[in-house]
Length: 255
Ligand code: 13P
Image (cartoon, rainbow, N blue to C red; front, side, top):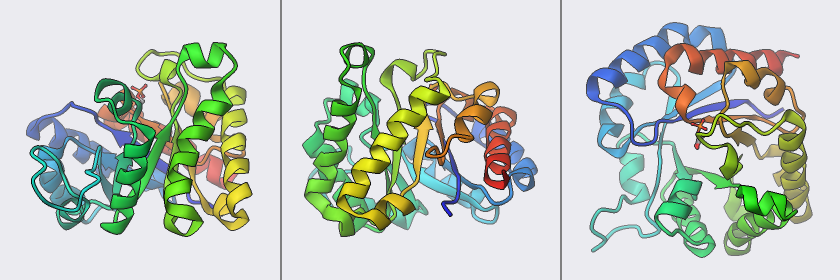
């Protein structure tokens, strides 16, 4: 049985005051999502303060990015052991904004994945197609290449307990969500791809959905067989909206 993961990617949003208010709200409603793993990924400058605020509240902490290097002359980068030391358990790897806006390649994403695991972090590997790629019928080819780049580098053993996030680029921040069927199809394809490598890996790997997930669509998405949680942007910035999604995950787990 896979534990549902509901993760908030705050992207480049927040302030000390806004974070404190958001976390207080999430903590106040944490009990409503009992049995669901909650994760927040704040901007790097706030990791240590969020770690302190979440330590006793059963809310995991993740970074939005991680370097492929363990240390050294890499100005502006953050190494996995450093993120681990300030309290991170997870790191997002290969988010589409990193791929598109900062030119991260499949090979670099695979190197980051490997560095995250080596540094004691659980990677959340983001994959997803653009609208153009979907319309050309290339969705499976795109996500399969993104996943294969990592598997080819680390193998089934090196994949560990990593999470895969399916985030169709056309659904991110657009208000357009994949239908539950569209999402389930890709999640099932990703799980089948993992099964070709290792059956046990496919069974244990959580595959979460991201892209305009909100309270109004979370219930149907999370009820799909191969959707094990959500990676939420906009709706993770409001405690009530984030908790409403987490509550849907609790209900899906109990169903
Ligand atoms: P939105 O929920 O704002 O569409 O963002 C999704 C996302 O990119 C999470 O990583």
